[in-house]
Length: 304
Image (cartoon, rainbow, N blue to C red; front, side, top):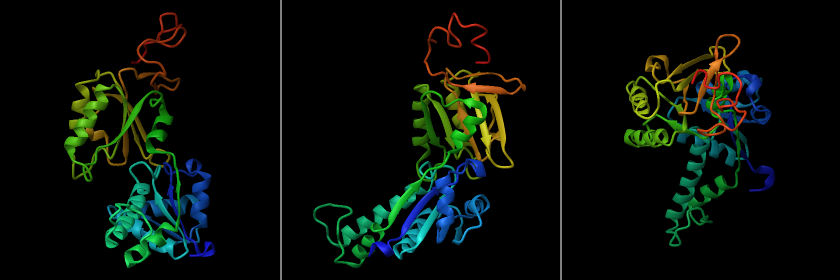
C-alpha cells in the first residue's frame, strides 16, 4: 500500500464531556475523520463538542468493543481516516486496549495460519489470506489521543485527593472474576493507597459496591473522605463529599466515579461551606511548616 493510500486509525478520548475539557488534538481528529465509530452516546457527544463533522457516523450499542475495533481497522486499511471515540481517556478501561487487542489477535491468527514455528506473533505472513489481512492492518497509522479521565475531572473539582500514590480499579466483573477484584481492593487498601473506582455499580451487580465499601472499612477509618463525581463537566454534574462511614451504594450509579481517600487524605471547609479534599505530598509526618506539622499555624488536622 502506498503512503498516499495509507489509512489512519485514531482512538480518541472525549474527556469528561465538556467542550472546554476536550483536548485540541481530539477535536482536530474528530473534524478530520472520514468515519467516526463508537458507542451511541459518545458519538453524539463528539458531534456536540466538535461538530459539525464531515464523518460518516457508525454508532453501536455497548459491549461490542471488538466488533467496533475490527470495523475500524477494515475502514482504515482501505485508506480512510477513522476515529474510534471513547469517553474520558481511551487508554483507561476504554477502546484503546480493544483496538490494540484486535490488531494483536489478527497478527496471531496470521501466524497460526502460516504454521509459524518460530512463535513470532506478528511477523510477515503474507503468503496466506490471514497474513495479507494482518499486513493491511499493520500498515494502518495507529494513533492514541489521550483525554482527561473521569477520576482526574472529579478530583479537580474538590482539590487534590490524588495528590499522593493512588490506584485505579474497575469494579466490573464482566471481564475478570469478582474474587480478583476483591483481592486487589484488599491489597490496595492494606497498602493505604487512594482508590479511584470505575464502573462501581449496575443493575446487574447491585451488591458489589456495598461489599467493596465493607472491605475498605476493615482497613480505613470511618472518617476517610470519599468523593462521588457523577457526569463531571456535563450539564447534570453532581459532586458529593462524604466519608467512608457514611457513604452508601444508593448514592452511586454507573456514571459515577468513586474516590476513596487513604488514611492520610484530609478535608477542610471552603469559604462557600463545601469541602476541599486533598492527600498530602508527604506521608505520616508533616515537614516543618506544612499543614498538620507541630509548628504549623492553625488547626492542621481539620476535617480529617
